[in-house]
Image (cartoon, rainbow, N blue to C red; front, side, top):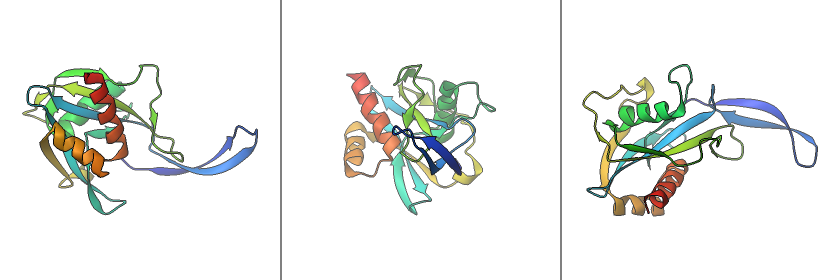
Length: 174
């Protein structure tokens, strides 16, 4: 994903027009996060990905932008990201927020929102979609126990949108 910075005038609750620099990822300003969980083995597929802004490796779940020029809906974007980044397909899918929700806010000065998904018992994709060129060699796939995934979340080394997706997924599984 590539961000752009926008100068926007926003009318605040005090009825004042205020100029802000906001970031976002066009064209939809939406992205998906997928929590791949294998119930049988109580395992989670996690990614370790180089985070350029921090110059560090961080943990996350398959994540990617929704581009309506490439896929027809956010669910299809989630299916594509699962194949591309985790080399998984199929399974039982659950959108973790209401269908009429615009998505969960990324941060205060962002126009981006994310849609979290849970996929239960996905299987290996023998012919995964190719990674985007800028992601080659910067994503590592790991299958870990649910307990280790919880430990990574509590350590503060799980990207925030993935942490939210994990929390919603585990609540949905109860």
